Length: 607
Image 1 (spheres, helix red, strand yellow):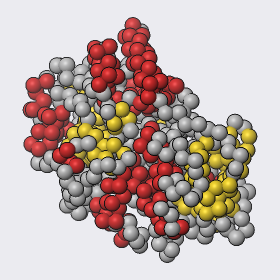
Image 2 (tube, helix red, strand yellow):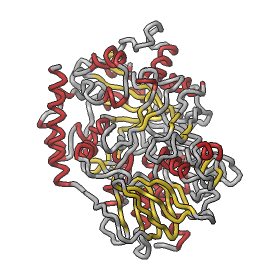
Image 3 (spheres, helix red, strand yellow):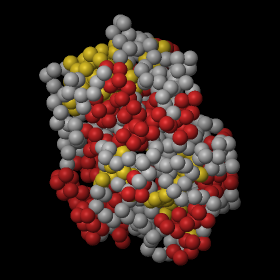
Image 4 (cartoon, helix red, strand yellow):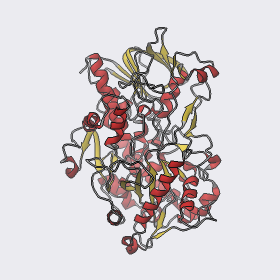
């Protein structure tokens, strides 16, 4: 109890300091219902893609743009926690989080309450770029080339690279010098982490010892290891709200309404989208778009809103007495996510990782507050990332199957104050496996699967827009997925067990994982048991409004992101990905927003 109280005091001190910083640097956007509800464009969702689109379209003063965001800035605790990079895990289940959860899983999530995975999605301006771990990964060139090979013209990596570079302002002189793959001067700041713990260099050296190469994972070859780069600016989070909306919010042709829950897309008898119906403070409003409605609500809410508007599989719509506007079987199908195991932990005898009761001091807080330096600048404590092949993955030698992240802590770092419930761990797993790690030097290696063959669904639970949809990712329903995960866990253990870590007295944490006690420690069957127990989602949801050519029966949007069989309606976010990209999905979502903006401007001859 004393240690929990001490942890609470430290966190309260941190919050108070960040609050002071927030007052000094806050960006609060006005949220007023305009008297004029007629616009050229309506953008639904002010997240990673939607903020980009609203900003870019409003660059042309001849058009009026309305941006509707379901979340709000006016939540001090959420605002505070989102500002500081290292507190990213603590933003979960605050007002900035939709706080979704899946249905009980059959083959996974055994360590979670009711075998349900909690899914974080950003509910504020900036969307999930406001609550994520800020890691900047574009994906592999072959991801985009595969999209193009399916018939999605102009979506190859060569086509997409200019849109990544358009946003980018890379502050690393070394990477920025590679003008083929990087750029400076864009709206989105991409930075090296100014802090490196003592375990970073040994980890990189151990990766080389195991045959991996070091280099830029966003450059010519993704099969590399490197200290993470993230969307941070001067040691603080740089989300799409700050990067794209702040430079634009004073434009007279851009209106931003927060706390606006869009209820449905308005579609006339000619099957043309002409506006939206939305709710603010219990009052229903209507806004009209003379040109287009652009749906950028994310891989959960975009298909949900299409279904509520009568666009989707006929049988599902009829079940809820929703009039069918367009029979599109692919709406809500093809759900993909990156998953892995969060149970590979090493303890250390020397003070080389983050221990809250020891390290969260006034000095550390002031170091961040005054100078944008120190541990609090880390991306949710993630310090290194790497991409590699496994024996069970695809045959392309330059297309990785797994990604790994080095975490300078464990989910026990807060003593169970928030993270235990944030992840939904059952008491036995917490008390037996994680709780003993509190206040100890320990670090985690997180391996995860890049190309899941298990695909899930988003389905209606009710015709009421306020009722969340039914989310079933069907984790590990395909046997190939667990084989790749186990292989990636074994490669992670090989790196973590390197003699290079002996200087810290590091040891692989060998407390048997609950439910796996009868299996040989770290055997293939034991690793599989751990992965099926702690099935860690990396919240990289994609694919539920699949982009594809007209002859693809499951395509929802065409290669210009126009919804099939409904005019003047586009979807632009991670939901349009036919296959999820190799790595963190925030940078690709921003690039999708850039490309969508370009295509819309081309359509209407805008500047």
